[in-house]
Length: 288
Image (cartoon, rainbow, N blue to C red; front, side, top):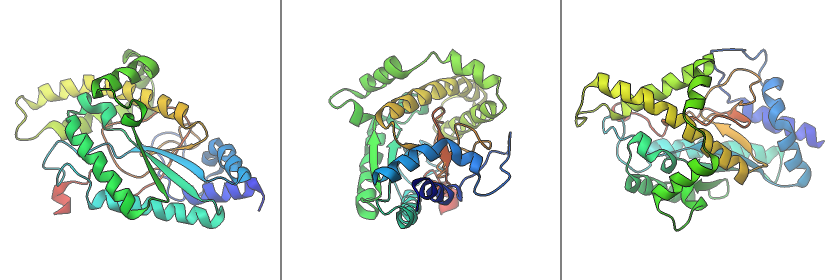
């Protein structure tokens, strides 16, 4: 099979799971050639070199701080189902391209700690649990990466300061851009909703209206930090295909492969694809 043909076959398999945004241009076919186009060169180069295809997925941040939404602070069956889905996808790619694919899971909870109000100790426990799950389920198909790998030996606050200093932008920049873009505005409102849902529980000391005002402001900082994380990942994994958990309109250069894990963050920028799987932040009430 020709390198481009193999690349198209791989992307066709991935794009079978793509969720498109209800806003903006819609796909006219499935799989969609317009959505595959931004990624075909990277995949074809990996095929030509006889190397595994790298798929970078910023996701699996941490468990929600709202005890009504989750079963605890460590990964559970939701993460296990999502990892098994991704491993199955890699196995399907291996049938087309024998060197296969590896999903680099970029666990980003540490990136957003002070913005999502989850303590670093809980994020550390979650990351340890994810490593145990990967070792158990699919060490050949998955690799874990997080901010601790970028700044070994530094404090967690120093790590976040580094990403802001070296890859960040003033939060006013995404604020103006999001307000001018229909998809961006929908994404911003989704972040606000997740922040409010995660923090509005019995132990919250204030009113819900005060929480909503705070979350509307904090959401812009979440977007700015998320973009900084995306730039860091692009520099660290320049040949990888970017995956995402968020829908995109057809043909977007931020096209995505989604795992339907809804963390309170959004990675924007780069070239992404989308794949639906299981949600690590599945509600406790729905899991009971």
